Length: 371
Image 1 (cartoon, rainbow, N blue to C red):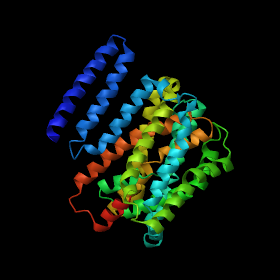
Image 2: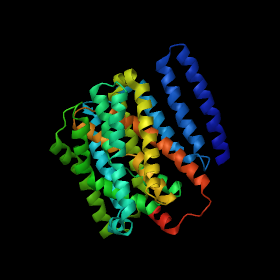
Image 3: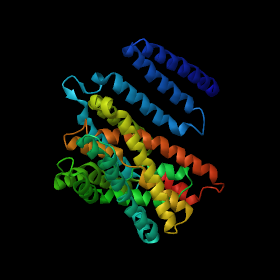
Image 4: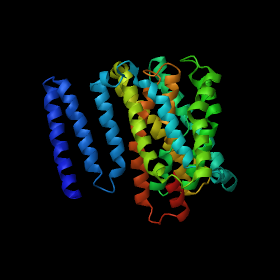
C-alpha cells in the first residue's frame, strides 16, 4: 500500500510540475501557483516513502507554503479584521514551552561534565554567526532593514533542529541539548547586545525592549516547560505526541505570514537574499567544525558544534522582527533561513551518518528522544 502511494505521489508531482511550467509560460500565474503548491505537497508525500528522504519532507512542505504565500499573499495577511501576524509571538511561546518540556536540570548539569565542549560551543555560537552575518551585509548591498535581519538571524541562539540533526549525524546529542539550552538562556543578554553592536548602524535597536521581548518569547515559556517536565513528567503522554506537530505547524505558519507580508520586498531582493542566507548557513557549519577541530575536540563534538552554530532559532528572529514592527523587512532573512538550514542541515547530517559505521551510543539515543 505504501509503495503504491509513493508511486502515485511521484507521478502526480511530475504532472503538477509540468502543468505549472505550461501555465507559467502562458502567463496564467494565478493558476500556475496552485500547481506549484500541489507539486511540492506531492513531492513531500513521495519523500515520506523513503527512510533516507523522509527527513526532507517537512522542508518540502515549507517550500509549498512559501509558494502559496508568494502567489496568494492576500490569504495569509489577515482573516477578516484579524491580522495573522498577531499569531507569531503566541506560536513561538507554545513552541518554546514544548522545548522546555524536553529539558531537565541534568541538561544544564552537563556544563560541569563537559566544560570544554560547552565553552567552545557557546563562544562559537555567539561569535561566528553574528560576525558572519555582519560581514555578509558589507558584501551585499541590501536595504538597511534587510541587512539588519541577516544580523538578527545570526545573533539568535540555536534551535531544536540542531538536536535532531546531531542525532542523525551521530554527533554528541547530549552536548547538543546542553548547548541549545544554555544558548537559549543567554539569548536575552547576547542577542540584544550583538544587535546593538552590529545592526545598530542599520536600524534603531532598543536594548532593554529586546531583553524584555526575548524573556517573554523564550525564557518564560521554556521555564514553564521545565517546571512542567520536573513535576508532571510522563503524566500527559499526549503532549509528547502533539507538541512536535504543533511546533512544525507553527513554524510553517510563521514563515507563510512573513513571506506574505514581505512579498514585494522579496521580489526585489529574493535571489540575492537566498544566496546570502545560504552562505551564512554554510559558513556557520564550516567555521564551527574547523574551529572545534583546531581546538582538538573529538570528531563527534566537532559535528555537534558545527550544527549548533549553523542551525539558528529562526522563529525567534521572526518574533523579534514583529516586536520591532518590521516583520516584512527585518523578518525576511529569518523566514528564508529556516527552510535553507533544514535542507542543508539534513543533507550534512545524513552525509556524516553515512561516513560513520559505529552504532548510536545509548546516551545519545536517550538525549535525542528527549529532544
